[in-house]
Amino acid sequence: MKSFKTIFSAFILCSIFQFSANAQLKTFTNSTGNNLWQDAANWSPGGVPQNSNNVLIPSGFEVNVAVGTGANALTLEANAVLNIMTGSNFRTFGGATYAAGSIINLEGGIFNSSSFSATIDGQLNIFGGEFKAISGNIIINGEMNIASGVLDLGYSGSAIQFLTIAPSGVMTVGDASIEGYFFGGTFVNEGLIQKTSGAGTFTISSTFENNDGTINIDSGSMILSYSGTLTDGIYNVNSNGFLELNGLNGYFIIGTLTGQLDGSFIVDGAGLRVFNNGVNFLDFSGSAGVVWRGGTLSAQAAAGTVLVNRGLLNYTGTGSQQL
Image (cartoon, rainbow, N blue to C red; front, side, top):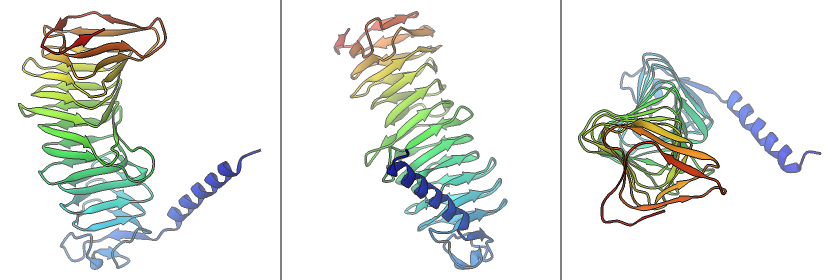
C-alpha cells in the first residue's frame, strides 16, 4: 500500500504542473521600444507579468530586468536576450527554458530558478564588479562565461542547489571567483571548464565536484579552496600556471585523474582522501607533476583501497605532509 506521504507528494506535484499549464501566458512585445520588463505596455496581454504568469520572450527581442520580479515559467527563444541588471532579483517559480542561441547577461543582482531546474542551452554571461548570485538548479548545456568579479552560489530555500556544467557544456573563465553564500550551493562539472584569459587566478570557494569533466588552464591559474570530490577527469595546466587544491576540508579523489601538467597540480590545505574501493590512479604526464605542499593523504574507503601514482610527485614547502 502506498503511504500517505507518497500519495500527498504526487498530488502536490500534479497540482504544480496543472497550475503551470493553466497559468496565463504573457508575451513580450516591447511596444514602447524601451526594452523594460517592468513597463506594462510592453506585454501582451497588457500588464507586467506576475509570479503566476508564464512568460515568453520571442526571438529577436531584448529585455532589461532592473527590479525585483519573476514569473511562473519562462521561455527565452533563440536570438532573444535577457539582461539582469544591478540590484534586481529575477526568479522563476515553475522552471525555465533558455533556447540555443539565447543570451542571458548577469551584470548584477540575483538569477534564481527557485527549486525547479533552469536548462540553459544558450549562453550565460557573468561580468562586472557588482554583487551577483545564482540560486536554484542551473544546468548549462551551452556556454557560461565568467569574465570578472565574484559569482555567489546561493540557496533558494529548499534542497541543496546545484550549478551543473553538463557534458555538452563549456564554462570559460578569466580572473574571477565562484563562492558559496547563505548555506551555499554545489558546483558540478561534467563538461569543460577552461581558463583562457588573465594572468591571475580563478578561485572556486564553494563545494566542487568534477564528475569526469575536463579542466584546462591555458592562462593563469586555478584554486579550489573549499572541499569536494574529483571523480576521474582530465586536468591540463599551462607551464606558467598551476591548479591548487587548498580546501579546509580536503578533497576526495575517485578513479583515475589524468592530464598534461606543464604547470603544477598542487596539494595543500587538508590534503587528499581516497574514496573508492580498489585501485585509484594519479596518471599525469608533463614536467611539473603533482606537488604535495601540505595536508594528509588518507583512505576513506574499505581496506584494500590503493592509490597509484604513475607520474612525478614532489614533496616541497614547509607545511606538514602525512600519509
